[in-house]
Image 1 (cartoon, rainbow, N blue to C red):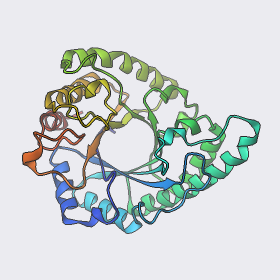
Image 2: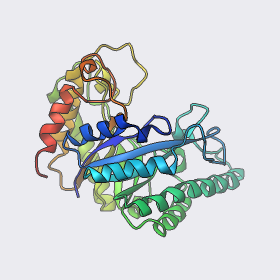
Image 3: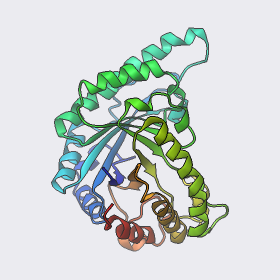
Length: 320
């Protein structure tokens, strides 16, 4: 399995998956040569120390929204990895969801995992019913990852509901600390590694900086015997963003289609031929795209109408 994919569906409002512009966006996504989407959506727990994850009516996509998006993707010939995510309403990154490191914390961990399992199992069952080709059981939840027994119980429960392959989306830098990767089918990573030394660096510099990352991930594969996919990877079309590919806050940075294109081409060249590497879900493709004429001024992660789209189309047209 080699995944030529793109993340779709993130950070939008309920009902948008069912708008005409969403189908137009999905068609344009497919036109890149993509064969998969990660359908990514989220709900909110009140804060990072909450033990309750609830359906947030103002935020969470409805099952009807998700069903519609999956069916549209399948009609276009796209495979789907369903990716439900829990964020924190206090604005703190989900990596910090957790509780104090003391003996009194375990009841809180048990309560949180019970709530998270219920949240996740709802979508595992939905993924099975809709024929989703992969299911993602978590994303960048660094503080939870050390709770191995809880994760093992969660995976066992999910597998009773969903028969397809499972992945977990670790954050870059934390992937070596997860002891239970042998229990998933595909190791997923948010690959926002710094690969530029200065703004405007060349493709050659970026390839050089990808090589130690590749060596590290080859060792991770050897340790667990699982293929590795970049569940998230991308870079904004803004000068300096290859130094911080995860960045979405520095909106003042000038446009640089070239830096984004160099990021795309460098990582593809570095990883494409590795037999243990399972592909990409690029971050990300918007449900409602900007007009094509605005591509030259857009500094977001989207590649629609940009140099990076040309790079991706060329590579996704190749056999692997």
